[in-house]
Image (cartoon, rainbow, N blue to C red; front, top):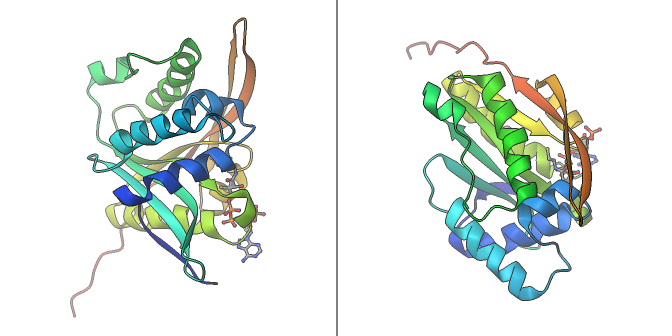
Length: 215
Ligand SMILES: CC(C)(COP(=O)(O)OP(=O)(O)OC[C@H]1O[C@@H](n2cnc3c(N)ncnc32)[C@H](O)[C@@H]1OP(=O)(O)O)[C@@H](O)C(=O)NCCC(=O)NCCS
């Protein structure tokens, strides 16, 4: 049952969203971020697929990747490795928030992106987001392959990597050399929602570049 990593293509975007919905089911922050869950009406899921198609496919610096089980041809895990170029002071101050974001999503983005900007400052770095393995396919090494895909690029370029890890993801990142810098609590409540979630800001320092020797 060989598992293979490759780029998410336009035709994979439905799988990409459905695996995220199944894998993050029950996670209140992911529910806010996605705006629906796996039990939502199909029209809501279809709308999320179209939103993700715009933000994930063919975007500069955004690298959506998938793990396929080549025995079945099924996609079993997905993630996004994104490159964050060096930021100007103005860009560091300003968090990009979509116009139609709900108040809960605005609070999430301010918490996550604001902390990331505070920690990483104006340095360029890579970040991994939306890493998720379908619940039927956990503990087969799929997420490890997704992390390794980015680490190979990062170590080639001698850059740092930063992640906002869930409690599930933290041990995996530690195995790849990420260290916890902060524990951040996201809290939000209104008349419908009462959410409290802890996540871990983790950094993988740049590894020294290995000089290439002539043949
Ligand atoms: C976190 C998550 C992505 C891990 O996915 P996964 O594909 O099960 O991860 P892996 O299989 O690569 O590694 C998980 C464990 O399985 C073990 N493992 C890897 N290959 C294995 C194999 N062939 N046989 C048995 N165990 C194996 C790993 O050693 C690892 O052990 P550890 O947790 O003690 O470190 C998954 O639990 C998930 O989707 N959680 C919900 C969403 C989430 O929190 N995502 C992380 C956001 S930061």
